[in-house]
Image (cartoon, rainbow, N blue to C red; front, side, top):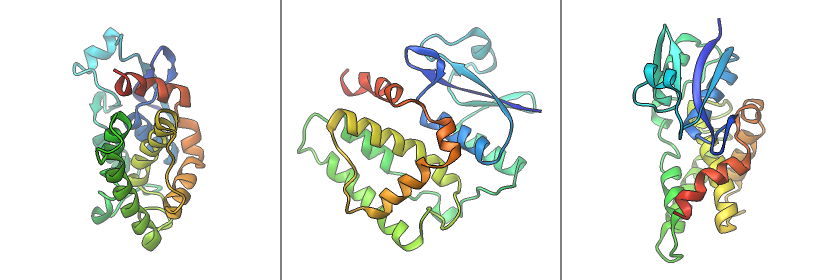
Length: 212
């Protein structure tokens, strides 16, 4: 029986998959585990009544599991890992936080209007730390196999590459070769191709945050 998952629809295109990185993380997990699922696209600016009834907080993603709607991508992924252990996407606990500051520093940088406020430098520090880790332990965070930590980072890197390229004409420095290879590996996975939002929807999603 197919699972049901509710994820964000695109800004201005309610019938198209949206740009929520946490929604994509859940979809990536479902795809990697080859679990059949039905997708409900939720227009965040006009949430359907049935959705608010089962999920009063109105946040996405949510997964229907055992007749209950479960929110929070981390909780959902944990349930999927326990319920469908094969293939395992388990990340060793000591590696679970690798790269965890990249998204926050990216957000500060993409919104920044002052080139000297240190936000670019902060992002570069985080990317360099990941590059060093991948150099020693790669090609994925936990070695040869993709795990949950990678599925969380993949959508975030998609936002980073797309939004910084568009709004700041900025790219990840070539010197960070292991990060470049990592991003290429993640973006070339079949699961990623099937679950990514179109670039224009990612840009539209950031537009009002970058230029409020």
